[in-house]
Length: 477
Image (cartoon, rainbow, N blue to C red):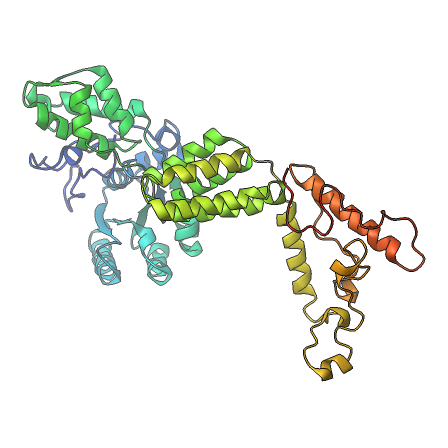
């Protein structure tokens, strides 16, 4: 029904019947309302619907090792307990945050003695298993293979990044989704009506829109929703009425679902980057807001905006890089929250700028050729010649100073002989780049006609397309 809300203390060794542990009236509401059966469990139909393999495995009482991957409040611990209960197995839980391998060895030794003495299996539930390093995770392998324990690992992080491959091959990943608001709403109603474990004895009344508010604000986390409901009930008191105002008070502050060091961090920055690349300023603003509200370092976002300006816009709009850098400096100068507007301005500017990855592709191509041709010598005519000996050896010999040429460009190559004539940068059709294409074509023509035997060419002193003679920098008019 909800999530890591403690329900069972674990199966009792030697007990012929499976009875839920007594409810501690002083425990948090979330702990008291932990589901006791699969029928009470809300959500996760993709795993626990009728005929689904995991449900069939649980009902058969034949558990196998697995990794449960899902957000907080989605039911990982509860599901582990229900699996142990159905299999009449001993449930032993520990957290990788507070306990280490010595405790694992103790649990394994106890599990082996239990199995030998009674034939009873042990469900070893490792919460936050991604906190263990590679060597610590490897320590589970022989005991899982021997069947000494059934390992159920729980993680909020992507197992493909955090769990070692040998363990994943022995403990398949089961993905839990955030609970739907309707499921959270049903959990809240059950808690309000239940007189034994919930708030039924308080005889509260409630508005539907107040429960909707709590369910929506929970972001799929049943534990968070029940905690907010318990706080709301304390505010209104026995016989009180739960309306939206009381629910807001109970919520206090809704923390955004965002892990700066985990998968969601990369998901959100990917969404921001792709929104900019896709020229969607609304998407860019939304994901920027999500990251800032979630506590992301604004300067990290600023750095990524600079990257977007260079990678996705490039020379289609040379001003984009300046805007991104200015936004970084503005935030550094103003701080939060005033400086966030500068980041928003940059995000919108980048999203609405013409896009070109030609510079990105050119750099990749040039970098690749540089790695392939690390031994190619610098042509003599463009080498530096600071000493008489170097000049005697031909360093700088034949170099022509381009600004002194008739049209500001000399007929000479600037690549190693082996690479002469190769092209890395090809301007695209967007924004400013067509003007760059014209300029490059004009220079190429001037080099051609300047060669011995060349013909034609521009008039003496003629400027390149869209620029003044001997100009430097970009003309963006």
